[in-house]
Image (cartoon, rainbow, N blue to C red; front, side):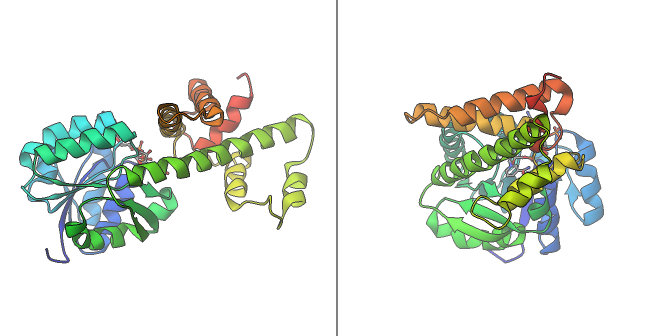
Length: 289
Ligand code: NAP
């Protein structure tokens, strides 16, 4: 395979659009499709071919990249795309999905002659825009080198794991930590305010010590600065991930109370009208309205 590839990107939301732009910057031919056409259209200005359907986006593609909301969306979109994919193409599946979804999608890929790579990413809007994601990847060893130009374009680090499913396992573990930190910061901020404690006093207290945390400072800063839109990682997407994590725990015999409670916080925040805001809006779930 040549270094310059044709990549069909399905899903140009927060992450997919940024990844498509970095593939273009790296010199690849990029064909994009999004369910809501208005989110794909601006990519024409970056040099992408904006396709009218998922099938058109993947036609002639060496690599198909899916970056959609969840496993159901991936299955639905790929059902339409499969007949147009060229035999032997590589499928990079970066949507965060359940472990059961990975198995189903890998089976679908095998049925349609695609080489399937379970390839979720760590990092949010800003690292995605900067091409600094960490790609967790697992799939057939003999074609891994062919994906180096794709992963190098979207990320600064690729962590290869042994088989499909292993990458999503690690992704769910990492997100369990990220979501717990998000809620811990949101609750700590709301408690400080309710008790009349200046949040800066708390931040000064932990500064530079083992309890300090850059992520906590970023997320608390977004809430205090009223900078929750546009989201880096939306509340509704975070709720989906929290439920995937809780379900993975249940299926594997561990009880994840924080993940369950966190999913409920995201649900309440969305119900209050904060679903499209950054997940730091978990803060609002501390209040009745
Ligand atoms: P997003 O901006 O909401 O994008 C979601 C995309 O999925 C949109 O293109 C949306 O299309 C599409 N979609 C949803 N349901 C669909 C359906 N039934 N059929 C076709 N298309 C559908 O979300 P995102 O933040 O980019 O996240 C995308 C994936 O990456 C998620 O699995 C998320 O968990 C994961 N992720 C996100 C981050 C982050 O920080 N944002 C980081 C790592 C991984 P419309 O535009 O038509 O709604």
